[in-house]
Length: 116
Length: 117
Image 1 (cartoon, helix red, strand yellow):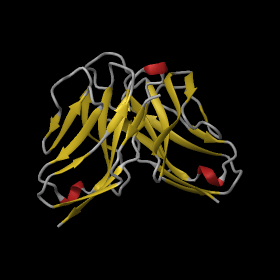
Image 2 (cartoon, rainbow over the protein chains, first blue to last red):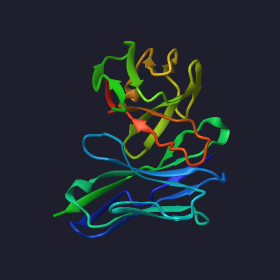
Image 3 (cartoon, chains in turn cyan, orange):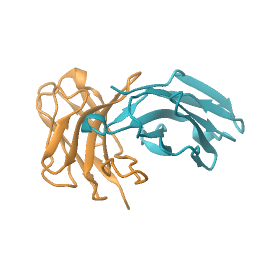
Image 4 (cartoon, rainbow over the protein chains, first blue to last red):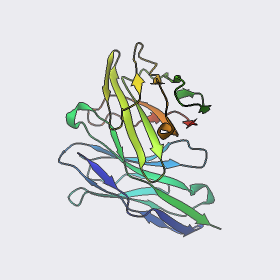
């Protein structure tokens, strides 16, 4: 079964600085998707960025970028120029097709605090 | 506007009183699923559905039921709620996995905070 591990339960960053959140996963599949979701205090799950495993190029979305290392099964999220609104819980998630369930497998989350 | 709508957002109930949390999506997605979120555990899948009349168990299905009579709706039913089902619940929908490059991101509802006393 696939697993997703976020080794940092909490992180903090100064406003305008850069922070990197770690995520590793375990799978035997060759085709899959990886996601980072943000959950602010409102509890809404918001997609931050996605990466297709077959793409070698790292995904970027404005201030958010990933470092996808397929061989190492690593998928870290870098937030540049951190803003107060980035404070939230961040979840790394994996989606494959093994067994037909196609479910999202989530890590336990990293709580990010942004200090002014 | 593309969205997944869950109701209610907050619910306090007593042990054993049957309840239903509704979920509806307007994106014509085949795939729908329910997750529960508990502190320190992330989100875990309860049930999922590949299409109308096709449902299957996720990782934590005990104590829950679902149905998929229409493509847009996927209600979660707790026949006899217990305190260990106190949690934050999310419904999500997406396109089926399969075609590489097709956007398979999951769209989530607003969440339902359930408390069983």
